[in-house]
Image (cartoon, rainbow, N blue to C red; front, side):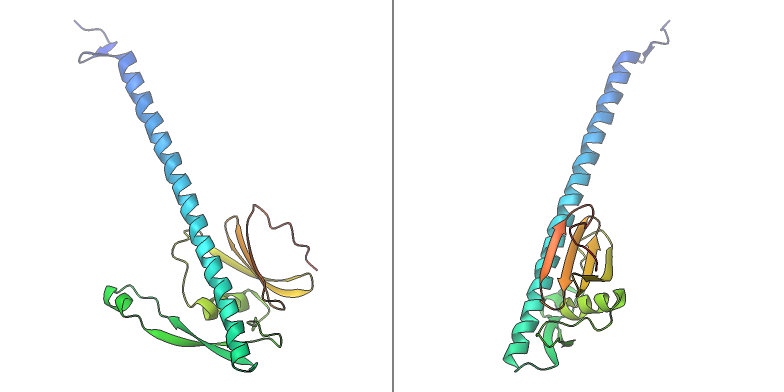
Length: 178
């Protein structure tokens, strides 16, 4: 008769060791998956920050080219899920209000105005970033500013100068609100 310490030819110690190894491998896999997700969010954020910065400067160049109008129009590709439409993309013109200094203007000094500025400049979502975007309007160093946050990543747009900065920090404590 077999004792309770063996189950179908395996000892209890062997089963515990196998379970511990499975748990260890599972933990390593979960940690790897989380690190991969974090890295993909950073890459997606950097891509979105670069696209936003390029759109700001493109609007400024267009403002200079058109002899400093109050509005400029930028052509943007309409996002679609259809493969055929991605191969032959459709475009639309976005009208962007400009400041007297020639930078994209925040039309409403609140979070909705910042969201609208993002949409007008990029006309796309940031599907590569799995964290939700939070936008806010602030006055930083006396300038009208939009702050876009994705977790611990922050993109800041200064309306007067057209400066776009991005940071990966826990708190955006480098700015002193006026």
